Image (tube, rainbow, N blue to C red):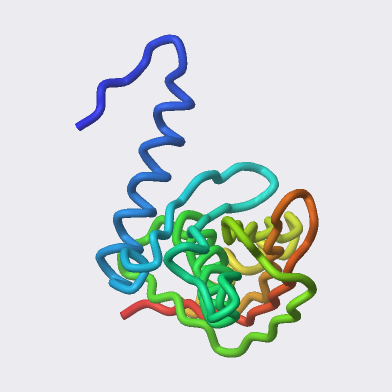
Length: 160
């Protein structure tokens, strides 16, 4: 258990949630450990995960396309997991597409953009009412300030 920092209690809370999200992903989706996936941020802009190219490379020593897709999917998954904060919720990707724009050479950094406030409110309302909801999420994979890939995924959440 971590000690709270009285000077920055909100930061401790965010750090604890990020660690909990990373632990959940590593336990529930074991390949995330082999990929070296780390949860690095969650704020008003979105949810960010990273994985090193060294563990996710292709024959050209750039990021393997399947790994880029997986990391992008996990960024969206992680955003929903934190947003719902409901142990009975099961998040699944129903459909997705990705566009690869440039090679990734060092770190696969995927940022799931926070949906508009009204989209998120409708999603929460549907989940609360029907215990099932669907939402489309957008993820950008960024390296050196440039977009390397764009992902869009339709996610369904339901209770067990």
